[in-house]
Length: 110
View 1 (cartoon, rainbow, N blue to C red):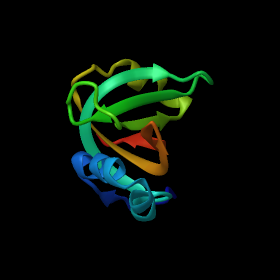
View 2: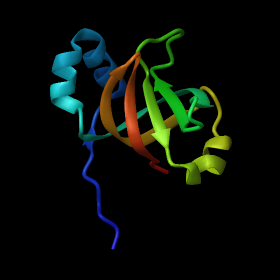
View 3: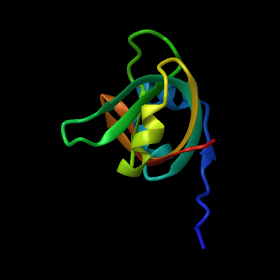
View 4: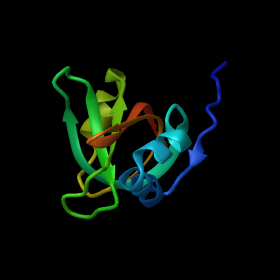
């Protein structure tokens, strides 16, 4: 039986704006919680530890912060089929700000 994750629905502009405006307040509101949000795919990459991530933002150029959504290796093929600029809905567990808003254990909502 799969556990159903309850995720807060948050607009990407709201999430990023909260962290841009007040990291402490945004952490109090979102850190450690699962959120569901939809935004525009920026980068589809691996970090230095080869962990897969996708940046998701509002579509503005040079946007900081964006949501940096980390995925399990099993998502490799699915992430490989994404395109920059497409809309993507994800559920992630927010783990705070590190340049970008970090989202761990992310899933794509098809």
